[in-house]
Image (tube, rainbow, N blue to C red; front, side):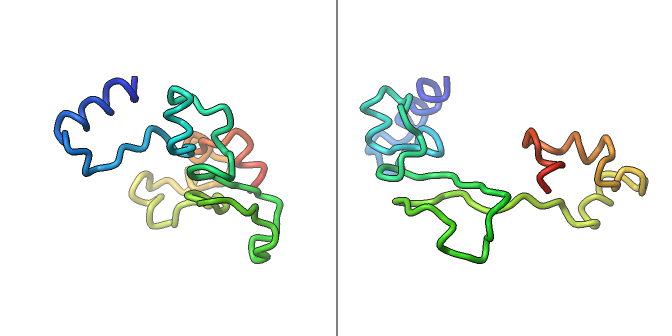
Length: 115
């Protein structure tokens, strides 16, 4: 839907193509277009961009990162500041690392365990 709806809308308002349309991220750039927007290997280090998350590496050691064309996402997950939590809930029970609120915020399958 994204390709055929949003890409068409962008092309309609920008017929000269002055705004590049990125079909997804990570993306293999022109290779993704050749593969009908379904990349065979969306993390290919030779084309487009790569996302890299490794929760068990030494993040201070640059040798632990893969060599890729462009890394658009990397890092380690973290929790919001206490000030941010206070905007959502005044109950200190909700701020517990294993509370229902905190776990509901978690989008990574093993995020709580890996943090």
